[in-house]
Length: 352
Image 1 (tube, rainbow, N blue to C red):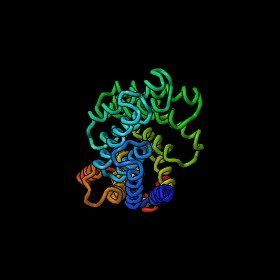
Image 2: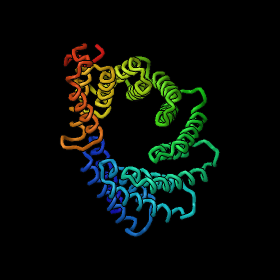
Image 3: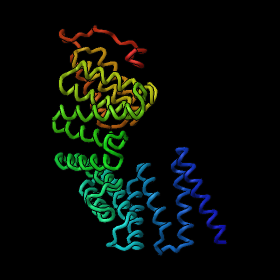
Image 4: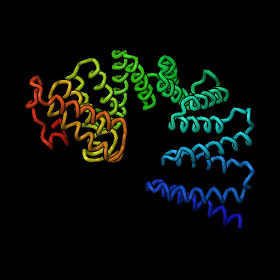
């Protein structure tokens, strides 16, 4: 009987994984919850067990993915409580550190940044107690990354730089100085973001270019990959902020090319409308009203598909605001309104 039950538990879990891979997340959750209940029936509803704690943790992650943070928090809290009962409340253990980190992610997602910070710091403290304060380890690097991103959200940019620099040095030690790895590129990109927010544009540009160089070396020069598109996009933004509009336009063109190649020019993917938006803004800065409007309108069309026709998403509001400004400027004689009209085919592939 127990053997049959374990087979059924395994079958339900595998079905859940299959539905998850197919994108049918509600069906996946149904099978996972059934598997969880059977695990509790075998191990005891009130008894802590590693199998149940691990499954609760995974369920929490899935509930977060489908946008149900309350249920995600509940599962992660149950998982943490069970791990602490198993390993000891004051015992440094990777399972406890991981649960604390996952709770931090959910708190951050719902805007409870102080609670997120507390859980990330506890997770980092445990990771360092396990692996050594100054020893390079992927778990410590992950905690440093999460703290760096959160400090940036909180506006504590010096602390964000500190954490990202620590993570970068740790990743270079783990993967090898001079070695090419996506984690190193990611750290450089994060540093570029903070420098840009601090208006240290030369430093931001340097970090973004270093990140791009690694991305291109990993994925291939001239190849289309999301990381390359993201780096080109960030470089374009910095040039744009520097007032170097031609350089900004060139990088946004390349970024859009990459994103169109990856996602398709009609695919409702969040990356593509953001490049279209930036492309339009550079044309707007260059007083090419018609080109700016066409790229912004295409960006708006895709944003509405991504976020919903009635969405109040800030990106949609920003594009609408810029379009209104362009339409308000329509009658001004200084606009080069007839410059280089962009056809629909050029809009789909603007660098042809």
